[in-house]
Image (cartoon, rainbow, N blue to C red; front, top):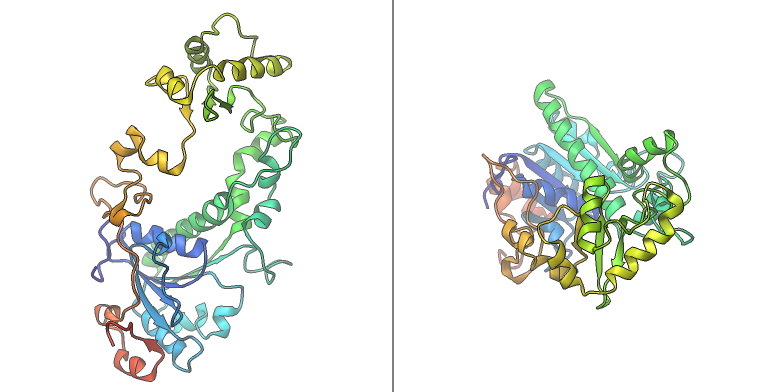
Length: 380
């Protein structure tokens, strides 16, 4: 891999990522997938994990930020970069000597992306947290679950990666465009609380219009409607039903053999009976049999697959959505581009120092000699 990155629309963009956990590394991976040359700056002895997909496509270097020359090493990279992303608590980067004001002294155009749960200010800004707590405060966790049951945790997809990393990536790219116009960088304050709330814009709109209830499992998209739910099949597997539009619902009933016999779905009073009818019907065949029944139809029915099963689905295989480079199953870069296509997923990096030469880092020899930057054993 060269300093031009991986190929893709962000080829030539240089990103310094101060190593952390979860959403900031995912943002770095996404930028690398899009072609940016992302340098993961980790602590000595704490390199990327063998199967840590969030570090794919990057290069890595080890810097001791507690060393007297550690901040200078990062700033030497920053001088040659377009973007820096970090996931520290507010104020930590400043205490380490690599906060935005210090970085702008060496590179006024730098976009400084900050990823936190609570944001850079507010009563909770300095406190610890995790995905589940962030989405709890936005109303999103409360909205997910079945009627009469507790909120259901959607892994850490809505908070860390949806409301966090993706918003950091969008913010960084927007600020990068602005910096190229103005010649000045800025801080991108990406908060998981802000992003997760923003993801709920449609639900908040429904609520304002009186068409969304705070009672879980009673609404159109939260398993309240029996034609938007999952159903168990005879082999203990499940199928997902999303027949919202009338024409799709009509095809659902036709393929189930229920046309003309199912109760009127437009009256919510009929939903319990309709749900029981659909549940009884789906339990009569296996998931594979129902998959065949609905194959190629507009009934909006899909088998609920495990991650391993998903990789074997004909559509997923045809798109190359879940390749296995080096025998490691993983999602392919997304989205896709017609003129500047992304490169295939690249291996997880081992810490090295070739980036110092590739980026023409000022004072590289002195920084290496001081011990602020650590060489990998194979380079020593």
